[in-house]
Structure formats: C-alpha cells, structure tokens
Image (cartoon, rainbow, N blue to C red; front, side, top):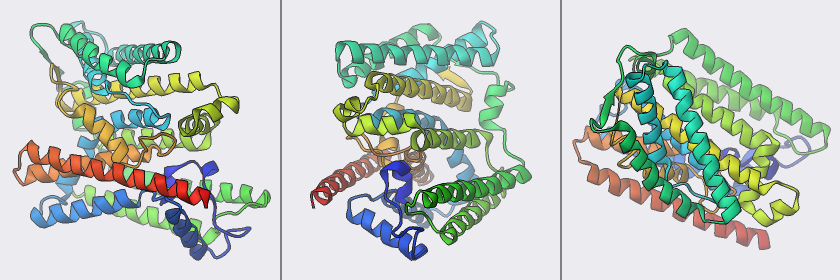
Length: 414
C-alpha cells in the first residue's frame, strides 16, 4: 500500500532478482518500509474503515447505496481543489487562496454564461485561463522577489474574494439553468451499468499490464521486480473490489460521471508524478531544493508549474461546485472550502515538509472529510462537531507524518 506514496524511482523493490518469495517477499519489503518510517496509506485507509464502521453503527443509513452515491459526488469539487494543493505541498509550499480562486472562477463562469450569454464551455475556458494567469503571477512574485508563498497566497485570498464580490455585483447570486449541460453533468449524469463494469475491467487490466511491463524491464536490468503471482493477485483484488462497489452503487443511481472525471484526474496526475521526469523533479525540489538545483533541475520552472496547477485545479473545483449547487454566490469558495482542501491533501498522506505524497492523497483525504460530514449530518449534529472532529483527524495525520519523518531520519543514519 505504501507504493502509492512515492514514485517507483524513490522506493525499494522486493528482495531478490525477481521478487523472490512472491507475496512473502512483498510483505517483508512492506514491513521494512514501515520500520523505516514509510507508513503509506495504511493509516488513512484504517481511519476510513473506523469512521465508516462507527457511522454505520450510529446510523444504518450511512452505508446505504443512496448515501454513498451522494457521498461520492460531494467529494468531487473539494477533492479536485485538494489535488491542486498536493502539487504545492510536494514542493514544500502552500496556497491559502484556493478557496477564493474557486469562488472567483465560479462567479466568472456564472456571469459570462448567464448574464452575457456565452457558451458554457467558453465561460469555463475563460475562468481556467484567468486561474492559470493568477498562478503564474504568484510564481513570478515567489521566484523573482522571494516573497513566501504563505504571504503571497494570503494576500490572494483577500484580493480574489473582493474581486469575486465585485464581479457578482449587488445581487450577489446567479442561478445556473437547471437544463444546462454544466448542471446536468454535476447532478444527473450517471454511467450505464455496462460501461461502469467495463471501466472496472479496463482498470484491473491496466494495473496488471503496467506492473508486468515494469517488472519485465527491471528483470532485464537485473533489478528486483514484483512477482507474477503478486501482480495477478493485486489486479484480481482491484477487479473484485471495484466490481462490488459498482454493483452496490448501481442499486441506487450508479456511478456519477463527475466522480469518474475526478478519478480520471487523479490517475493522470499520479502518472505524471510517478512516471515522468517532471514528477521526479517535483519530488526532488520538495525533498531538497539545493540538491535539485545542483542536479540541473530548473527549480523556478517547477515552482511555477506547481502554482499554476494548483490555481487551475482550484478553479475547476469551484466550477464543479457551482454546477453541483446550480448557482454561484458570495459564499462560493468560502466557509471551510479552503481549509478542507488543504486538510484533505494532508490527511491523505501528503507531507507538509515537501517531497512526499501523491495524487491519491487528495482522494483518500476528501473521502475521510466528507465521510465525517455526511455521517454527522445524518445524525442531525451541527457543523461545530464536524469542525472539531476534522481538526482532530488533521492533527493526528500531521503528527503521524512528523513521527514517520523522524523515523526515516533515524533509519537513514543507522
């Protein structure tokens, strides 16, 4: 499970020239990584299981197919924003303005689409271009003037909130047409069952093929590689798990297209971070910026890309949130959106110290946060409890990261 937390180039493989010992060797390697401070996603998955178990005991409706369909859809807007936050945390920086940028983008889309009659796709494109420009501006201030990202984005939080209020004008709220493709996509569009099962089978096959190809390349190079049995078991487990999940969700409305989009973004981001030179450069900059610079990495370009990806995904998440609510208003991107997006990335396993984490952190983290919110709502408890529970989970996640970081440092000196 810890394979999800760092690119393959930064991890050790199972012992032996060809993954000797099969599953036993893989488990031994996992135990070594845990002793070295690499906890992977185990604490997050374990926490999610505990949360779901407790919520189901307190309210049997929690794990109903209807509630899980809603839970999946509600995860998407803030989850997409959290995906952008992962980029910033990987390079050891922070963006405090993601909530304001998401609200500003929602306002831009609503004004251009509803008030000015632009096609929805063109309004979305305009909002994304604006977000990219804001991210580039952040990067220039950071790279050229040396202003800390905390200060830059804190100023952005205030400035873009003011711009959002100015764009919306005196009425303060704009409703999106319920029959527009933007709204139906976020609220009413679900995969047909056959397509959902086809995507599950394709995902399991892709997991096996990519693992098989990589193992073959490592064996040819004389390096440790995952055994064939482990690859088959892993793919079969994914096929069975996702198949059961799809079957259960299909008892209600099924799998929403918006959730599929989120999963697609996570997978593309994971590939970019774990399988490309760009991704290795991001981990290198977050791990040790001076060493990365001496290795020939263009550090300023990496920082710029992180700022741009963060603001672009924040804008996209804000647009999806507006589509989900069929409205953009003065509270769009406000409230706890900003903190939940950052908390989701950290709870999911992305280190605040830079250099560790990946795209799956956004998905796992937002599942934890949204599960807490959904469960407490079903129990008719107000938001005060949600804030306190989420804060406790966040503190626990950061504490585990700090302990793991200290353990890795000790293990490295041993």
